[in-house]
Length: 199
Image (cartoon, rainbow, N blue to C red):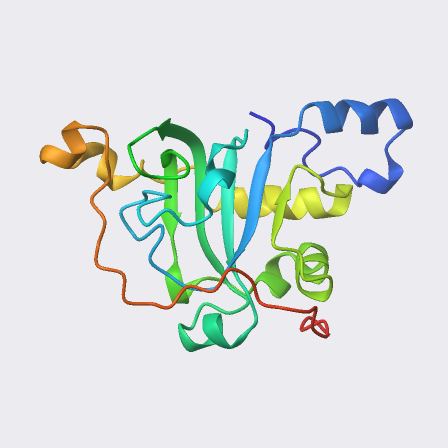
């Protein structure tokens, strides 16, 4: 896919044609900010509780979920951290949901144990947190995209979503992930922008 394109090159020193070629080879990566855990959980089904709704139907090659920095994500211990990574989406449409359920060829779940986004991807973190960006798809600067590639490397050798290979029950035979009881309060956004936490 596009993860190896131009690896190691300084994008600020590439010729204009090389920069254009690099952009053409890029994966479409869906990066979004989370307020709560649970969707997906460790089983790797994005949309199990219908989080992010119709956004799940967008065109993308990989997804990175990062914790927001408000009170809700902080209370769950996911604030400012890389929560999960999925590469190679497989979408299944099921009744009574606003978007497909998505599983992945390679899925890595961190939850509250994820790496600090500011440390691994300072340019991406600065954009997300200082401007209160909720969702990004492909619209990255060259420096931000190199950071996105580095995040994706963490999952490129990970196993598929476990709910793809688990013994199917009735719901899974119908192409539907099995939802767990929702215990967290879900907030649609975090409000106004906040000072840059990356310093």
